[in-house]
Amino acid sequence: MPVERLIEEILINGEGVIGLKGAIMVDTGTYTGRSPNDKYFVDEPSSNEKLWWGPVNKKIKEEIFNELYDKVIGYYHDSQSTTYVFDGYAEKFEDHLVNGLSYKTPEDIFALHEAHRSGVKLNIMDLGCGTGLCGPLFKDIASTLIGVDLSKGMLAQAEKKSVYDELKLMELVSALEQEYQTQDLLIAADVLIYVGELAPLFKVSKQALRVGGKFVFSVESRSGNSFKLGKSGRYQHSDVYIHGLADKYDFEVKAQKHSVIRTESSEPVMGELYLLEKRYSELSALS
View 1 (cartoon, rainbow, N blue to C red):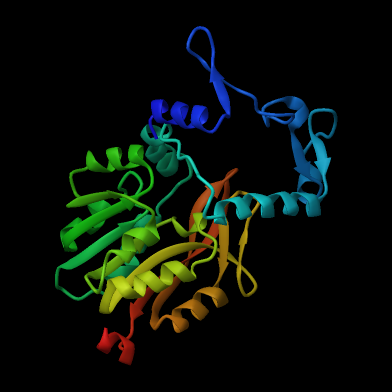
View 2 (view 1 turned 90 degrees about the vertical axis):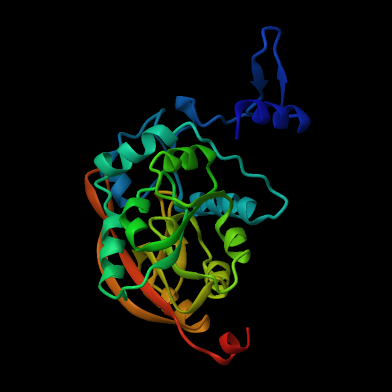
């Protein structure tokens, strides 16, 4: 959101005041997160090997860390909560992603889809399109190409590529709720790592796609039967969880592939790419 709007929200919510020279002043409370005395790290084997413990790097038990995570996630899931999106990183985002994190998920997703594509042009929605890295890859096979993102700054960068027919400043589920069997392909490249529970997304994706339409996406891998917020602040989803949702919402898993979705601290982060196809069902025929 624009700085002016953010300041307005701070004043309306009583979270700060304007100083004599016009600067906004906010009381952050006891813990700011920026002070050296406010730095805590989970006490577990990998951190013990790498951190120099002391007054600056303090230990915190994993159960306390998890409790704090649950409180944060509870805030985001609370429909009364407001989340503010910062657009200041938009101009540097793409360079950091591609050159800093060795990011090539758009190319990998495109290749996975191409192996199962017919020759017809497609109505495509690029969910969480960001700066538009998927756009140039899919443009030539698109009848219409729509980009959706929460960040106005990201969409401004995507618009510069001149490949999207329409760009929507919307949340993913809300955008798909407006579509009714109009789309042939949904793309979500490196997006679901920011979404925990995927059932609402799968439900509206089924609604938005025509029978035979496809949903191609990436997730960060984990074992088990569900999803979890990782210590990187990104969600991990298990293969069992994805297959369960696919079956529940009448999708067939046409293809999947192990993939390195990015690097962190020079280490590869493993993920999974999926290509789902909406199956024919009696409900689809009636709707």
